[in-house]
Amino acid sequence: MNFTTRVRAGSLSVASVLIALFTAGFTTAAAQDLRIATSYKLMTLDPHFSTLNENSSLLSHIFERLVYQDEKLALQPGLATSWKRVSDTRWEFKLRENVRFHDGSPFTADDVVYTIERIRNFLKPPSGGFQAYTKGIASVSATDPTTVVIETVGSQPTLPLALSAIFILPRGTDGFATTEKLNAGTSLVGTGPYKFKAWRSGETLDLTRNDDYWGQRPAWSNVSFRIVESPAARVAALSAGDVDIADFVPARDVETLKQRGAKVESVPAARLNFFQFELGKEAVPGVTDKSDKAIANPFLDARVRKALAMAVDRNVIVDKILSGYGTAAAQFFPNGLAGTSPNLAPQPARYEEAKALLAEAGFPNGFKVVLNGPAGRYPGDGESLQAVAQSWARIGVAARPVGVPFSVFNTKRAAGEYSIWYGGCSGEAVDVCLEAVLKSPDNATGAGALNFGQYRNPAYDEMLDKARTVDAGLERDKALAELTDFVMGDEPIIPLYHFHHISGYGPRVTGYLMHPRGWTTAMQAKPAAN
Image (tube, rainbow, N blue to C red; front, side, top):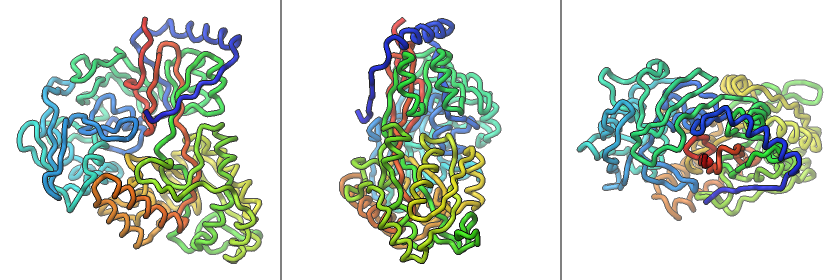
């Protein structure tokens, strides 16, 4: 099992008192009701509107996929019991029998066809982020009620992985379902372990058990999510016994929570947080010389990018900011996962080398820059801006950290208002981030969806395209590792750290299985015996 559990001794005297507070709070909850404080701000009930974890995590209670990824990111049967490639461009999926949607209608191959067609042919921007998963599909058909045949555009060896991201909707009788119709909730049905009950946008999501679920009977009768964006408020709600689980617990609060009687689980995230450069413009905002005179984009010079990467002390972030609940990074996924390079290891800060390189690039006195990022969205985000700004001051770069709410940050980043910023990427596999963050943007294929910096490297694009035609296995992993070595040598981003997902839970939960994708679900929680 690929997760880490950390348990440290706390103060027994303090813990005893606060355990009593926990117990008092929980007496108000029914035995089979689960209450979760989550940072995931669900903004829609349309499972195909956005690929953000916010939506996929919570909506996975209602909707299901053909293929799942387990805690090792290995593919497992979901609504499909098996799949095989019958030719270079044809896949066949056999579906699970005796599965019904929440309205009682049977799940069939026609629903899979409908779902893929809805994503490919109906959804339009700003929705439709899932279209990237269907770009390699030329056609989809149902040869019988339990068989789906998919023809692909050329060889698509990772099609099952792509389908592990897509929730299946039932075929309607009046055309494709609109996002507005799904958000109304009146016909929101999936095949999942829980049924939709109520939703208030950005505030709550209430679910009830699907007693006719085809798999193991869900443990909890009712599940209520309370969207709590403030980490401190989530911790306080768990401490007070107002909720049973709190996700995205700040590392700094772990010991306090344990002293108050909570248990904590964590797992290294299959993701990277990094700094990204604007590389598509000659002139960028927020960059000046030391006399505040605007200068040309210094990040177009790879020596400047490399100097800044050298001058980051990742151990300060991991040890001081994340309290050990993180890993210094040199590539997209933690070393050792499929497709990662053993040649890339985080380096200690090398300030003198960085200063020399900066001088060689024409900046012996450094420059000024605004360092942008979200505050409070990811563990260590705002604090990392401060820490890196202090590191860069040692090589003459005066960075002014500016952290803002994610919604504001996201809007300004998309509008091209930043020159360098804090970003993040997670995915089903490492090549998902290699394509999303670093491949040349292409609206037709969906490549470069997170390449806000407009990095373009044709040689890298070609290597990635070639690697993605290789079947899953050691040869594919080697190709991905080699292209990672190649592109990281060009310094298009500065890898910072892989944070650990941390969740806390109270006495009504006896175990909580963490997933490296960072989803928060009731299915991960095991109830205590009554």
